[in-house]
Every structure is written in C-alpha cells, then in structure tokens.
Image (cartoon, rainbow, N blue to C red; front, top):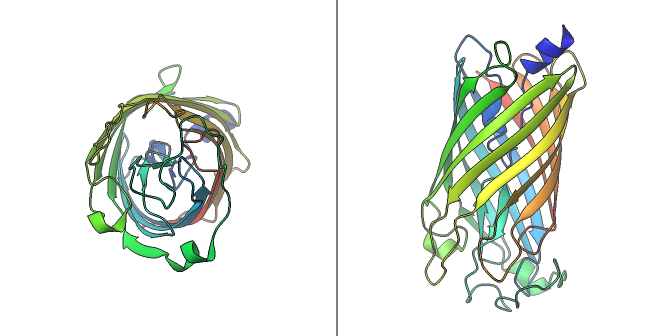
Length: 292
C-alpha cells in the first residue's frame, strides 16, 4: 500500500537548523528502514537575517558540509559550516540561529527586552564591508529508532546531540562552549501524509558574562509525499522555552521541499520565518545529498 511505502521513505532535510533540520533532528530520522548500512555526503548553502536583540541588522551566510552513516535502526550525522557574517554575536542551536546575548557584541549593543522583532532592518554599507569569514562549530547528532510503525502505532526515535566549540573565539560565531541535546521524535504515516512531533531538552554552554536558561524544545509538523520515488513537502513549527529572562523564546515555522532525483541523489529547499525577537526574520537554504 502507498501508506506503508511512504512511511518507509525519508523526509530529508539538510541542517540549516537546518536546521532544522530539518535539521537536524528531522534529518537524522531519514531512511531508517533500510536493511543495508550506507553513507551519505551532503552540502547546503543557507542565508539568514534578522534584527534579533541587537540594534544592527545581522546577515549570515553558511556553507555546510556533512556526512551521515545509517543502518536499519541507527543514524549518525555530523556537519560543520563555513560562516560569513556582518556582525558577531550569534550561534546555532538545533534548528535555529540565535543571538549569544553578549553585551559587547553588535554595534548598538543589546536592545531592551520586549522590542519588536526586526525593529532595525537597515543594512549599512559599513557592516557589509566588515563581513568576516570563519569556520563554525562542529555538530554531531545521533538517532536510534525505539519503535517502528510496522509493529506499533507509530515510529519513535531518541536523538542525542553535541556541539563542539570548534569556532575560534575571535570569529564571534558561537559561544565557545559545548552544547548537549536530547529529544524524542514521533512519526505516524496516514496514506501519503506523515505527522511529526518532537520534545527535547538542550544544555547550553554559557559564554562569558551570560547565564543561559537550558530550554525545553518542542515541535510538530505535517509532511506529504508527492511522488512514489520519495519526493516530499513538510510544514514544521518548533519552539524553545525561554533562554534569557528578558527576551521571548525562539520559535519559527519552516516549509521544506525534498526532491528525489534518483536512488543516490536528492535536493532540499528550506525556508523559515522567525516568530519572536530571539529568532531570525528569515532563513533560506538549498542543498544536495549523495548516497555513497
């Protein structure tokens, strides 16, 4: 039946949170029903922009390189970006780009809590000329399938993750600290549709002078397979609890398209919209996967 075949095909996302991938966690869920182990190389390009909690508008360009190993129940995915930015003071957490909250970063410093998202959207000529290019942090995610839909009502995955602070301190990208994450993901296939949900926790490393609250995370989405070959679309919402007291928690919506080119290659296109002052105004990415 089409529903079973759809449930055994991936909704692939390259991290932007991805991201957010879908990121991260969603990326790691792909192709869990394959009996044979495989390696996949991926690359993607992402641009994200927002006023965040700073007075200066921030634009980031990220070029990701990643590799994934997967077998029937286990998937491991690692990636690292090269980052170009016009202002320092941002880091990636799961599927989101968020501000580090450092008082001395960003030309105007931090804005008072509660200001509207993207209040200052102007990009000055000076900030564009000061664009810096540096290596970002290395991320490693795992996903293990606890239950599958063949014998149970739904798929359940447990997903640990770790961020290694490989970005140099002078780059202004990242916190210079380790982050740890753990989440549960749930998936249910109904005909050509897939319902997704997740709940998790992130232990954030504190940069100098900042005391983060370690957030709980949650999200849900609806995907649809648009071809027998596995091409799909996905709408997804995800949010954190508060990270800093005076600021809204990060949250965003994402729309993704995965196009299966053949048995070894697929294209992914992802667009996201932030829904709080602690999230980017927008994010867009495109990438390609190669099965080895």
